[in-house]
Image (cartoon, rainbow, N blue to C red; front, side, top):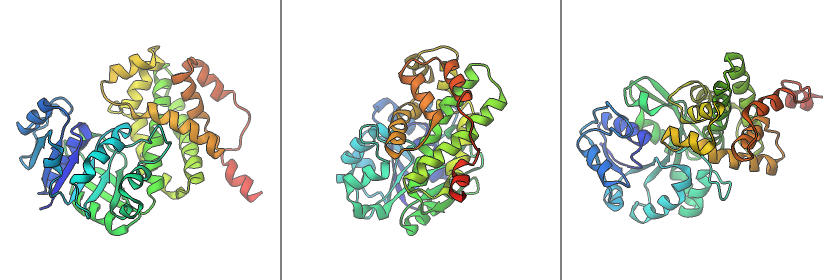
Length: 340
């Protein structure tokens, strides 16, 4: 039995706590809110996972030092925009050999950094050997109900990735390993932009043909940006790439898709985010990816049009017309150009 701390008691943090507790680990959850911690200690998290009876190995507290004390592994389940601050607050209470597992799917808006880079800035580059990212197609609502799920643990240190794999693996929760931290982080973050776009198309009343086109061409631009930043192309064909893209673009569990649907129906961005009632990571990620694409010289038309809908008042219908009216292209243009 290991002691695992989870920083963040939202739906995903609580669902992962359930997986770990069922694997006989002792799990301490940190919550900002006293009432949420008390609810979890009573065996439920009706705010984020209604109807789930929590395992008795799970406890919760608002005392960060108490939650982190003695933990062999710490899971950060906070939104990407809060990661740096909460990591700073956590580091003084963590052991030097503690394995850090980040499960947020986003990028830092102010710096355009991946979250592993944020971790390296705050904990030191040498600490990256004990950092891992856990990502892939997974909805908390299904994981908490023991619906079979497969994810990927990525770390530059394969021993760390395998430790995370062993920590979480169960008959319902399968974990693969991957050394490509860049690709896994970017795949998890950028698919939220495409989910916003497919949601907008759904809200406009378009059909399966449109959704399939958005997802496929969305994967192409995610891969282009990822490759330009040093990711392995094959990662985007795996769980953290196409796997996560499929589940986020097609499920009503997806906050990003639901937000996009409301925008497509005519709501403002603020109204759409409010209707979801949870963090919509894709909104901030769209800002970051829009800037990264320009910096890297990479064409990302879906990201570009989604950005203009969200932040420049472009109408959703006009954005779709812009995408459909682009000049003629080869589907595998990059490959053809390389070979030519």
